[in-house]
Amino acid sequence: MIRYVHHQLSGVATAVCASAVGAPLAFGVQGVMPVVGETVRTVVLILLGCSVLCGLLEASRLKWISVVRDFDEAVPLKDPEAVLPADYSVGRLLVNWGFLPVMLVPALVMGLALDPWLSLTPLAMALDWLMRAGIAARWEKRKAVLLWREYIQSRPWELSYSPPTPPSTRRAVTSATAARPPVDACAPDPASPA
Figure 1 (tube, rainbow, N blue to C red):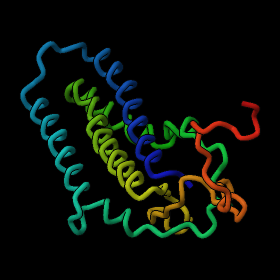
Figure 2 (figure 1 turned 180 degrees about the horizontal axis):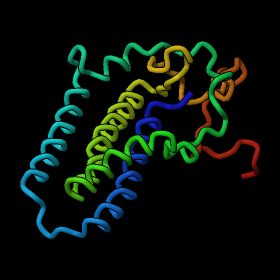
Figure 3 (figure 1 turned 180 degrees about the vertical axis):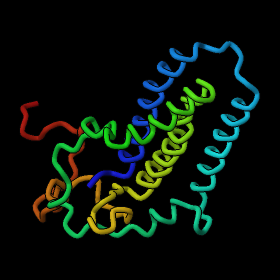
């Protein structure tokens, strides 16, 4: 299982790595062109515009487009204690090494064959994934839950949610704690000598 926000940030990191590897190779072979061709500029601007527009539509609640509706349809985890890792960290999952060649090869081919500026096209996908991560983080904060992917192995696209901490680590209110009156920090301690 992986948190949805971390999954999207992993895609962003992979796209940045693909651009960081592909762009120097393309510019090294083709040379740095001082002026970007009009066609390339148009393609890049269209990609960025579509990415921003798609991100805004995904943040809405429109049917068939919205990812927020997918978040609302997420199912709760049956046993959060058994599934939540104690030391979950995005560090080891930051770059998806299996997906890196899928992003790098087409960008590098376009950068070498057409124009070196096209080797930066993975950054347009990174923008979309970054917007999705922001939408999911906002949803998680509003609902006070964590959103997960791949809870059901046969349907990895389905989402589930869990509380931010496992239930066993939450502080249980006992009858003794509930019966005690609140302590006033400014009042003198009755046990101390005056």
